[in-house]
Image (cartoon, rainbow over all chains, first blue to last red; front, side, top):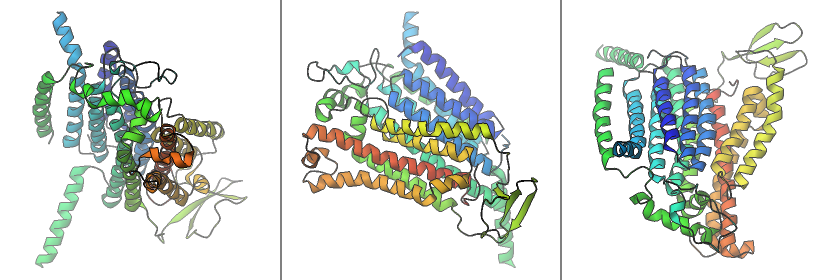
Amino acid sequence: MIWQIDVIILVMVIIIAIGVISIKNLLSVGILFGAYSFMMCLLWAIMGAVDVAFTEASVGAGVSTVFLIAAIFRTSRGSKD
Amino acid sequence: MDNYLFFIVSKFNYWGVMILIMIGIYAIISKQNLIKKIIGMNIFQTAIILFYISIGSKKNASIPILHHLNEHTQKINPDDFVNPLPHVLMLTAIVVSVATLGVALSLAIKIYQQFGTLEENIINNKIAADNNRQSVIDRL
Amino acid sequence: MKIIGIITILLSGSIMIYSTLDFPEWGDPLSPANTHLSVYYIENSMPDTSVPNIVTAILADYRSYDTMFETTVIFAAGLACFLLLRNFRKKKKEYSLYRHIPTGVTLKIKNSADLADDTKLFQRIDSTWVPFDLVTRTASGLIVPFIQIFALYVIAHGHHSPGGGFQGGVIFGAAFILFAISYSLRESLKIISEKTAVILSCVGVMIYAGTGLLCLLFGSNFLNYGSLAQILFTDPVSARSLAILFVEIGVGLAVAGVMIWLYYNISSSGKYNQGL
């Protein structure tokens, strides 16, 4: 638990979260959400929650990105806001 | 000066959680696109998980995996290991979150097949137009 | 709507940030959450279950009733996705595309249900056709078996390292999803059909519940693995460790099946004719 690294990763997580909800192209939203999940996974690995970090790396950055992109592929790619 | 630094270090993680919760609620309330709303819900979920994990963390503690060899020789000190209980609760929550993401996305696909769009205001207008037409037919 | 959203989050956010002043310090070993129940788990999980990873011990033994219904929730989510999206009816207007391999001409054929997918001259293609990609197919074909072996390792080694049924099942499903993306949905349906995926997830949930029922049969409480020592020929502590492995295998099967099932339904929006 090193708080300096934690601050840096936390700021990056917040910046990516703001980017995720403000970008208009939904395909890049899907990819950026994978990056968000991976940053979150690093944050948990720093705090010693190795099982949770492993789960998030496989679930959040892996499968849920695929699901999001599959759903965007089947619906529309653009968003108005 | 050291007092302020200590205060910030002991609280900044919770502030990060609150900011992520605010971003999630903002996306749920004011974004019109349904995929954006689903992503806001997921951000909210991960913020809650981060809150639980930061509750369970301890200073100068190791990960919650014990040694196999010295199981009977050494007394285990609980302060040396991170609190494992929030990890268990949140591990299952993450896997359930991907399942709920699947259900939410299939609902979004179904709505897109019905209305041809994912924007909430356009869907509302179409439903209102349908209701108006129906009421005109009823009056006739 | 935007202004309402901003006002709402500013009000609630300021209240929440003000409330953090009363929280215990981050990383305080003496905070209330770290001093009551978790101390028991850390001190006694090794003598009770002989599993070094405390998280696995709590997940599959102390709180296994919780985990059983989490697995059921995942299965129910797969079922809900299936009931929402699956489309069994074949529309009359449905057509499929066939590509003549020597010339590259694409034919659009109506009512093509009774035609074979692949012949020597004709090849069935998706509506967004991409040329045969040697690099992607070879690389994913090489890497998929190793990912699957790693998934089995994660399930089996969850006692000693981070990992367990949930992670291993998700990795197993993700390996198959990689195969389905790099080849096509029809070829992956030949290997694991929809029926197989559903049966896999049902069997996983039933292994979990069956382990619990077996404990009932030997005269102890539901999911109290200690009584399984009679059929496993070990002491009760090792019996708990072994029963945790059975339970993790059940969770892994259920999660892998549901992940594949969800991917099939979402990527083809319930028609199972063409994927991503």
